[in-house]
Image (tube, rainbow, N blue to C red; front, top):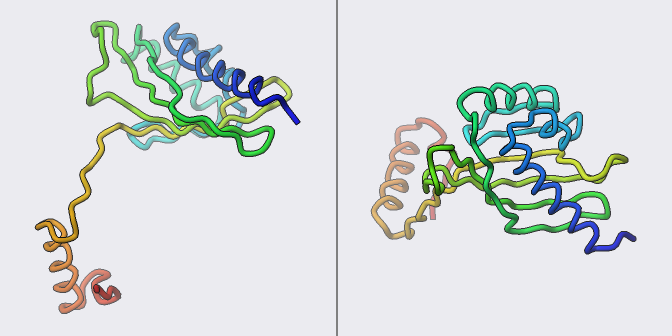
Length: 168
């Protein structure tokens, strides 16, 4: 069994290295943090499959629209799934050189899957998403009532999936 503190420190260091390599614009170091078959899903839903692809994408970003940017982040949650796999929730966002603080509309959250390899801990997958929490309407609020009404109309007229849905 591996020492819990050692594993946690190593994964936290990996996340810190991710932010630091980004901030330096070091594509080689950045790519080395990932497994060969890593998956990287950006906040816009675009997907880079494999280290070579995500490294190429970030090379263009670091030399282009994100030149001079910093990755500012922290780990919000970290848990281990077995001895060799960690899942962390990060709160990391790009800080552009002309800003001193992150704009609220650029805040992002990541789910990062890290695995222990023969070369140490590496990132196997990242899923990014913007932090724009929605307020879920109460079931009796107007948006909820309108949605149920549209579903009943769709069922009545036999359109879309409406004919398959049964509402309470």
